[in-house]
Amino acid sequence: MSQASFVAASLADLDLDPAPIRPEWVLEGNPIARCRHWSDSTDGTTQAMAWDCTAGAFRWFFGGDEIVHIIEGEVDVTDEAGGTRTLRPGDAALFRAGTWSVWRVPHYVRKHAICRDSLPAVVTLPLKAGRKASRIAARLRGWLPEPIPARVAMPIAAAGALAAVGVFAM
Image 1: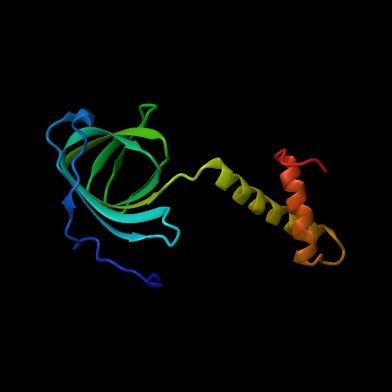
Image 2: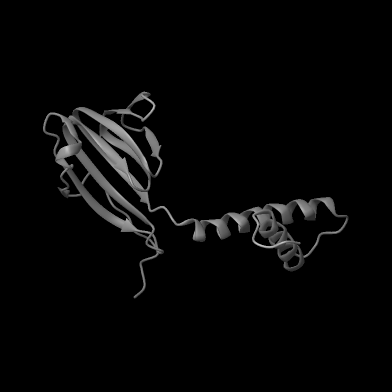
């Protein structure tokens, strides 16, 4: 089954479904949250959604990285260190995987969220090593009098990067 190459949504017009906040996370009031998932990445690790919430305060756990863009209303967000920031329409924020925040919604807030599942180290380590190898190969090409073909530089740089992270000895 193939996916469409282009997906779009009018975030202000999406009909949202109930998405209750866990009762044990609610600190004040009776915040009512709703959500609509509207798109996924091809690999299934990233989802796009619209979310809104009425007045109240609650703790929230971010199981994966989440980038939010406030569409309407505002929210005061307090991080684990006690720092507070008010997010208003046009503001964006990144909430890192594995963290808690306290959200205080004075009246109403609507956001667009891009949620990315955290990948295990066994997957991310080779990706990071590959990126590092590409940077090393680019530097090698810049230092040598004649450019090294990428098919030669990449294996050399990849071996160096893998040796640097202890995968094998050179």
